[in-house]
Length: 169
Image (cartoon, rainbow, N blue to C red; front, side, top):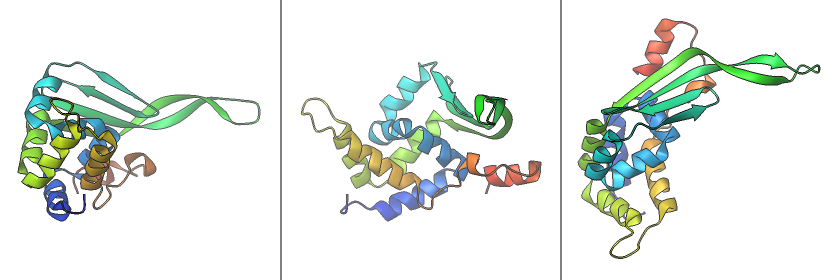
């Protein structure tokens, strides 16, 4: 990975996504890696899916046009006799991020050719098996974490203005 133009790719990534959007992509690293390695295929594939999931105050869903992630305050609702929480629920919304598949595809296609080619090689299974998912994930994380986006769940905004500032730096 040392021969790749990582600094340029990180600069383009910072320009393409807000901190909240990068936090969403870091939470769903496989999705970002799919767009990085095969942008046209990934866009077509995610348009056809209706997958959703999450847990512990975070949920996501794929729509026909975008991936949407929402962070909630994670609140205890029941406790043991010693005061230890045993049940939790999602509380107030902390942040929401929505990234259209077309933007993800444009981001991937805007990256330096060497980065795109290496990502494609690490995702390839046919005709020659050159896949290295650990390296592809590491590359994806490297692009998304410079500088590291603020973790949404680590800081609950005091008011709506602070939440908006977090969502749109």
